[in-house]
Image (cartoon, rainbow, N blue to C red; front, side, top):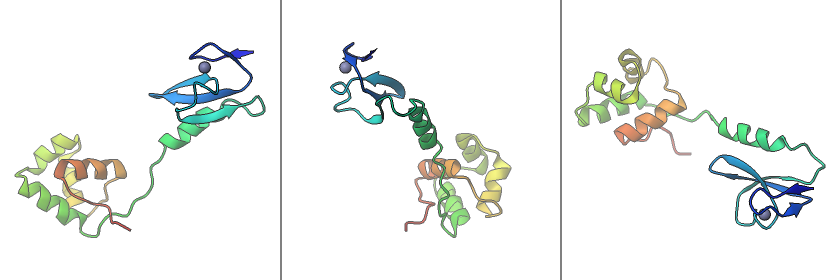
Length: 128
Ligand SMILES: [Zn+2]
């Protein structure tokens, strides 16, 4: 019989929990106030817990960017007194790429949108 990774108690059903991205197989008691990813009662494969975590981290949804995002970015940048070059350095992006975004010739991906929002203190995603 398997032992709980926290208290060492023998258990027939393992509760897979995640603490700071480390997965532990613990008994019912130890899983109590934790987020349980998966309950392994021996009927299903334990690697379902792995899949759950992978699926969750790959959560790159397509979001609705505002119509005048280029103008919004440019105005926010200028009001902060930042040149494109400085903003590019802050965001770790190419200056020419940001210039294209400001001219709305290209759309930033969701990661860059997030960085732009945080850095410039603006909202680029349309509220539903
Ligand atoms: Zn335990």
